[in-house]
Amino acid sequence: MQGGLEAWRIWDLPLAGYGVDQSDDPKTLLKLEDRSFQVDTTQSRIEWIGRNTNSSHFGAVRIAAGEIIVKDGSIIGNFDIDMDAITTKDLEGNELEPVLLAHLKSDDFFLTKLFPMAKFKIINSKPIEKPFLTSQNYEINGILQLRGVSAKQDFMATVTRTDEGALSLEAHFDIDRTKWNIVYGSTRFFEHLGKHLVFDLIGIQVRIIAF
Image (tube, helix red, strand yellow):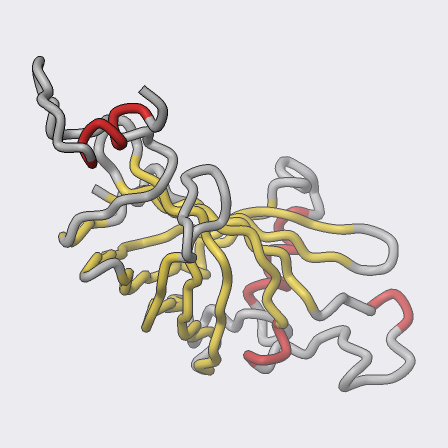
């Protein structure tokens, strides 16, 4: 019949078989039920990359704890980020590794002696009109507290459910470190930097798994 099963139903013609009143879920769009999730800190991670004119460094920071709550399609949540556990992958095992880590933990960057823990709070979010599972499907609005400074940070994320039933959130975006008073090597604040020049944007890749 032209129009298939839906047209058959519109004409109120008889149906026989199992589950005739339900159509198959094509599993292309995200569907979330209302509930809370606890972040799995062993599977979740935040990776970073910093750049200057001649090179780049990259590494990770640990998510110490976190909770995500889904309510009426909106996602909110809180995350604790252990900045004192920052790592650098590209210099792993190199004699310069402890030098860079000490610099990142110093007053020039994250000042972990006074502010060992960063916090990110999702204050609001909403799915896009058609939240396909394989593309960015959620707009996240949040507040990042870093070095004792709180500033707004928004980004797009891909939210899905894993085969084990966990909530998965993945995002790739840049943060402007100067919003948190990290101004080392920035030509917006200093002149004649030479080899100490460091780009303002830090690349962030987030993967959160929560059960």
